[in-house]
Length: 149
Image 1 (cartoon, rainbow, N blue to C red):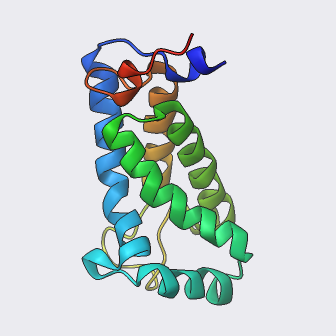
Image 2: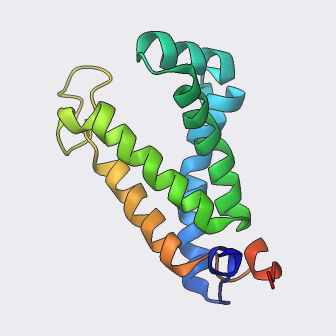
């Protein structure tokens, strides 16, 4: 099982997919965890997710941890498939729970009410994460250094 999870090749495709996914997710995770990029930080995000969004505390914690540490895992290529799987589940939940009812398109032209965004971004992240799940970390990933027996 560990061999399946950590095995990867030296391809540039895995590298590009995991870096793209991780680098796109990292600022969002850093907003939630650290308060960077104008974000609320951990306590502010927990308050928002539990009180305003109505999520259980455990799920709220997972949202923050997956978005922050999952992004770092993808960037470094450490446990790439595990991180990709968690991102897929997280973003499916985001679509199901929040953005699915808002339609496909994001609010590109500012014509929808504030805070209203469709799920197109989330679907792209899921697609990238599925590709990462199949390809593995690729070139220059920490997974490439792990050789389970």
